[in-house]
Image (cartoon, rainbow, N blue to C red):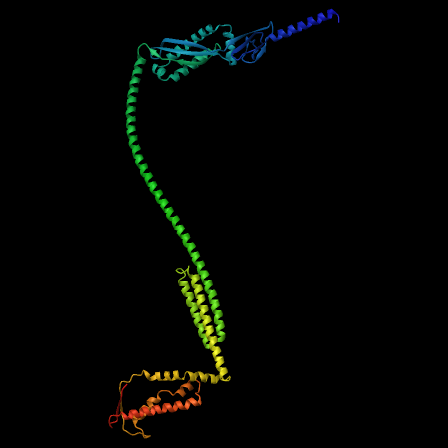
Length: 482
């Protein structure tokens, strides 16, 4: 490549770099604490009029070389000490109002435009003096329209009025009011001091009154507290007693439930024992019935009926007694049932043994009589004859006859006297042994019947003869003593 071409390329590159650097150097960014004011040829506004400046707060803008230029306005707050003296109030009383105002350049679009037009290029102290003059004028104007009491007591109203009037005037030059701080307000006549003393005296009196009221409230509060304490203590004691009573009631109810449960368990246990006892007795009765059935096969119909009736009665009595004594003897029921069963079983076995022996003896007696049952019965009767005669004698043995008087004439139809006939009839009132057997459906054997009748007849005749011999005389009166 020729040298000339290289030189041309380098020159072009330098020119381009310089142009780009120049363009970049004209691009300006606005810090947050400043306002960028672009002036020169900046265009027209909405009404078609040429704008004097263009204000930018935040962001960036390109400054056209030759046609435009730029400058920054500082947004740092400005503190202005306003020591207003001898300001005439509405009551024509001059007062001193020392105050401090804090102002700064506004960032509102219209007001910011005013600041660019009126404050651009001014130093901070020049802006401060300009704002102080505006504040002095507005502050005198506001004080002239208000009373001293209103300025002193209603400080909020005074500050609002100052803020409204002063801020309106400051906006005209592009400033905004940030803060107002009014210190002590004084006057040359001592009016405010008198008001202060009056207020102080009133405050002292109010304080004393408040202290007295507080003491009174304290005493009342203490009395009320003591009353409340006593009421609460009494209430707590009553609640405690109620709680104790409720606890006692719960304990009693729990105890009652426990006893009820124990009674229920005892009742169930008693019922179960009674049921077991009844089952045991039932088993005993079944065994007894079995024994009775065995004995019934051996006994006669009459004996069988008597025993069954007695057994049924005994069974009913035992059941009634068991039901009546179940509560008392519930723990002994099983043992008693076993004892009853053993007793019944022993009795049944004893009765069975007796019947078996009687049947065996009867069978042997019938065999000894050659198979003749009637003869066997007669043998038994003969064996019991002595007892039968004794029973017959016993029929008249206990008859008590103190005295019998008989009037006898001495002669009778059959050659016997009346006395003999009486005694004979008396002896015949005893039933003969043969008749007694006939009434029982039996007859005496011949070898026994005749001798017994003859013996009895001889006994009657001897008794009659002795009675006749004992007659005292022939008057026919016989005394018979026991």
